[in-house]
Amino acid sequence: MKTSDAEQIRKPDNQALIKQSFSDEMKKPHRIDWADMIAVFIGTILGLSIRDAIDTKSSISNGFGRFCVDALIITIAILAVHGVFAVVRKIRQNSKN
Image (spheres, rainbow, N blue to C red):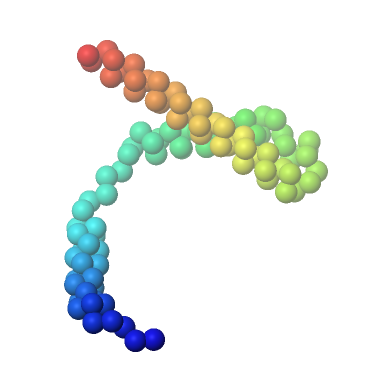
């Protein structure tokens, strides 16, 4: 399959554009959202504590089922903590205004 003349002309420009965008992306510092990281950490600890309190190991004999229930419990705990953080952030924002 033969490439057209227009594609041959655009090829160096496209390569330069890809190279430039990659170098720009590497230069930008990626900001860490510490509130999000703390929420995930607290949610994971809370989820694991709830999982141990429910004792899914003895109540569910199927390994795959136990894994799904454990993942669901931890996910719900993380989402709950994220929700609490969002509400607190919203209250703080409204109190400043």
